[in-house]
Image (cartoon, rainbow, N blue to C red; front, side, top):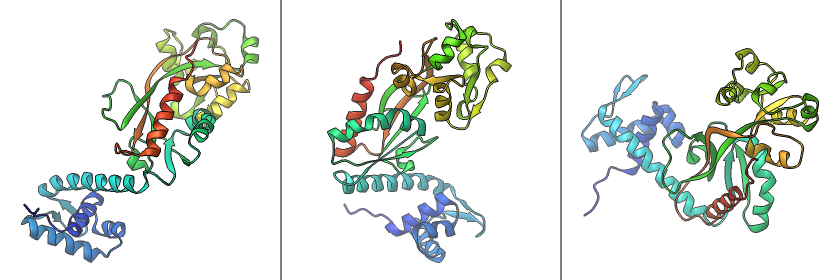
Length: 302
């Protein structure tokens, strides 16, 4: 039987206006005039026999019918866009990968030569994100991020679990030798502690999890760096002790640039890779397989 659907243009106009909250914003997104958006919305209202907007022209509000229809249309249009994009560039064009900037610099880039050696025809473009939770919204093919391990696990082929984050104190061998025996959190309390602004309370949380009764003034003392990468570099240069994830410092520890006297413990976060699409995508499939192999080859902390 033929589908009795409203005109596609009317659905697109309504979805944009409802999602953005203004006819003028929808007009800008769809590159048409506000009057065209209004006419398309009225056409949809006539087709449904229901009002979709209330309020005033300056402050429109969604009716109950509109609040039901808008999220369904938003999801449907996103799925159409993802599928068309996947079909169009699954076998050619660059692969866009987004992840935390320090992860990019300290973990991904040092290993990326191996991917290029295995897949010389696939260009990988890297971009950074701080709070990304969805590859489609980030505008990338793959998003590598960290999520609370205690939260509800993601299910489905779009999510690939990589590894559990493990944190531990690290410092330069020179500073360690000058500081004497370092085995417990109490041994670190007198040393300069380095902080990253993005994880300002990390030392206090680590000390508590290790059973150390540090005064708040001790846990908060020390220089604060704007970027996590700066904190790690300061530790390598002997400026203090950094609380760092194993995957970001394992190369430095194994090369002798850093020492980890207290080991590493689970931080409560898991690293995952989120695909933009679950459809067959040769370039993305190859990168995910390579990424999984790299994770499996990671050495475990001592």
